[in-house]
Length: 423
Ligand SMILES: [Zn+2]
Ligand SMILES: [Zn+2]
Image (cartoon, rainbow, N blue to C red; front, side, top):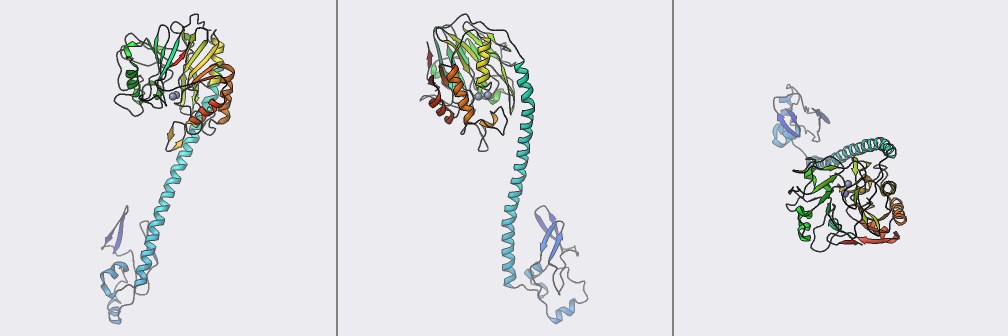
């Protein structure tokens, strides 16, 4: 008889006379059958003289000693120590085979992941240098913001921390009120894909309906700013799963987008928007996951100066501040928003890996943002800004502690539902 191997299943084939031969004089120690190594552990004990005589003229052993022994045919027997040895060997084999299989699978996956990351990093490095060069060679028309607002209030509607009763998540939305206008800056994440998103819940709690908005300002096309993953494929934006009527609302975005019934204003350079408001225009950055264009909102507050509202801060603080200094005729006063400082314990984990400070680093995956980068930014803030309200959707707690300790200006907290007032 022989064995037919199909995947992990072994069938006994009684027609096959070639495999697993044994003879009364001794068993082959191993037999390879279609890639399966069969170990013969059983000793074939000699049968009686009479029985041996009977078999003498037969083709020697086409029998499997294990099966024969179990069937008790041909007077074959097995001894206890053989069975025990087989049991131990089989259990050892199963355990080690299992461990080995896992090690091999893990090694293959880890190697593939590492190679993928290397390719990603290489792509990033290749694209990053020309983009920086292109940006430094660009020049725009300077912006004059003649008008100012007497009051400015900014209420976080979506952010990582919040006041009691407000929904929170790692996304961004701010409700901005000037003397004359109500603007919603970004539309949150709806990360859990709730039927009523954190943005919608919190707007309702604040007593604001979409139709009350004079403008929606989209900082950049990342899912935690456009209302969620659902809008990415549609190249659109939304309030949770909804797109309420916004016929009387202006929408400003840094890239072409669509919204039912609204012509979206695509901002391509520094530009005045309404009275006392302007956009920095998109500042590009090559991230590991691709290029992103991010604009920030600039508001001129009377007797203070410019307050800049920032989404993720992919632009980098250095570029953002020097850009505003270069193209706006009013000095900077303060900053509200995130400047992308995810030290350890960032908000984004993939497969349990704290990945955000690697994805956010302009130097690539293998040079993550570190404490010195954060200290450099704090130093810059202290030199250029009198007030900072730092969001926490991509700024880790560790960075926030450093800012609290080192920033020399006025530091305000960003919590959903807690109004930040500047006047
Ligand atoms: Zn973000
Ligand atoms: Zn982003």
